[in-house]
Image 1 (tube, rainbow, N blue to C red):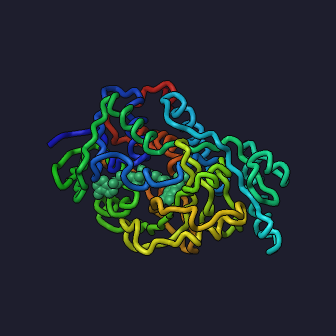
Image 2 (cartoon, rainbow, N blue to C red):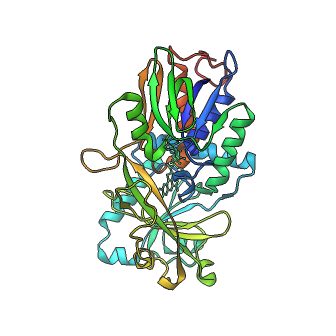
Image 3 (cartoon, rainbow, N blue to C red):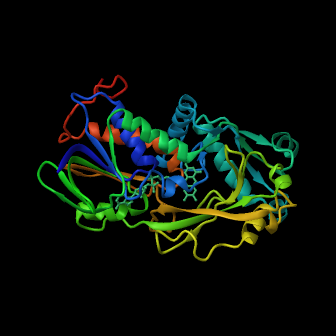
Length: 392
Ligand SMILES: Cc1cc2nc3c(=O)[nH]c(=O)nc-3n(C[C@H](O)[C@H](O)[C@H](O)COP(=O)(O)OP(=O)(O)OC[C@H]3O[C@@H](n4cnc5c(N)ncnc54)[C@H](O)[C@@H]3O)c2cc1C
């Protein structure tokens, strides 16, 4: 049986970012880290099926982990992408109110914009309020009454991002075990014994970054069901009409009322020049159900025609969907990220409900997890000697 200091379950953006972060810190002796993944490559689930937006965090509650880690993580991801040549589209984000919204009565959307502006102000995020002529200067073919612009927002190629995190981790000694599904977890006084459908490994610490299955992995480790993930599908269509595709070049989101659960169906440009519309939000039962009961294109046209009146169903082609691993609160709202040390001896860190903006937050989540690990008395090889760490 192979023995490691840390076993990470899941080779999505979060698992790979944690592996990179742990390997790049300086410990008393070389750290042995393994990432276990059920697919044959990284980012086969949610990390490869999203909008790729590096969010500013201002959509989130001010002191939430989602807001703080997205803000910090997006800045880290932009630097990382620049250093590693990862495709990045520096588009900026427009959050717009349409003329139709105005005719329906503005108050809900205005209060949403006001909340975003206050969040931006409190977090020192540069944003500006724009009038119709300001919007035209920013995105000439957009039809809207007003909005706010967040110039710092970029779109990253998520697959290239996660692949690069894996390459960096491997270069510094982390191991990846692909085609391994975790099916059992036992522990003794000093370590976890993780059983996959192919092997057993021993690890002094377990980090659960299993995305949609993180509730099941936590239950295996804890021996009771502490968390329950609600899968929420988001679908995308690609705007394939060449002349209409050229009309929108930036991220354009609707201003939604404050009680809305997502950020809304938006124009979603990508670094390679493709333009998508989506995602919607559809609660589903099966965590692997990417395609049944596809939402018709008319829903997406209806959501965005107010910004681009010439948009028609014939311009759209089904593209793909992703599934958010949501945790719901008692009041039916989405919970904050849960990053919890659920056992100290041996250490178990569960990452639960890492839905949007988890891609943005990943590098900051990894730092947060590394700091949590460093203060675990039972974590050997104990000390992180990195100059940036808390005990340096
Ligand atoms: C439609 C949509 C749009 C989104 N848009 C954005 C966006 O624009 N910006 C943003 O910041 N975030 C966005 N997100 C959220 C973001 O994609 C996720 O927060 C992020 O990808 C989560 O990464 P992860 O590593 O936690 O999970 P995952 O990518 O799901 O990785 C978990 C891994 O664990 C593996 N695994 C599961 N069970 C086991 C097991 N038993 N054994 C071994 N391996 C296992 C899985 O195969 C998977 O590879 C979006 C999400 C969706 C669905």
